[in-house]
Length: 156
Image (tube, rainbow, N blue to C red; front, side, top):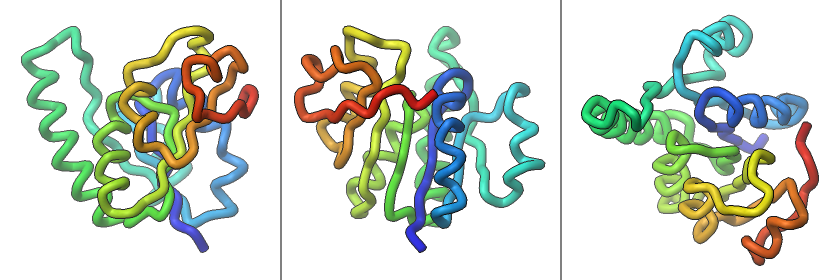
């Protein structure tokens, strides 16, 4: 069974990622997201199949720098622990280090650009587009911005 890592930040990106829940049972899956009060209940449902990275916001730049360094170190640990063949992400900064690490070690990267953008690139989209094995957009208009992408329609 293929090992698939589903990773995203919390909030809307996690909501989009969780729309893929029907796929979980088809794979040896693992979920990684940021830990916050809104999603700590996921641990009771997914048990050992979920891990958390630290939540950080760039509005608090000084603490964010340290949290991001810790996030990168924990990402290395989790990648070695999980050893995913595929990494599926809806973004954001939480996913960037994991996708690049995965690419270096041979994981296939599948990125789903957020439905929230219709006509401009997201920061994570710009970061992951060059390394993605499959880059999916949810709006046909986004194909003009990401010519190598495929239109997958809405995941909602």
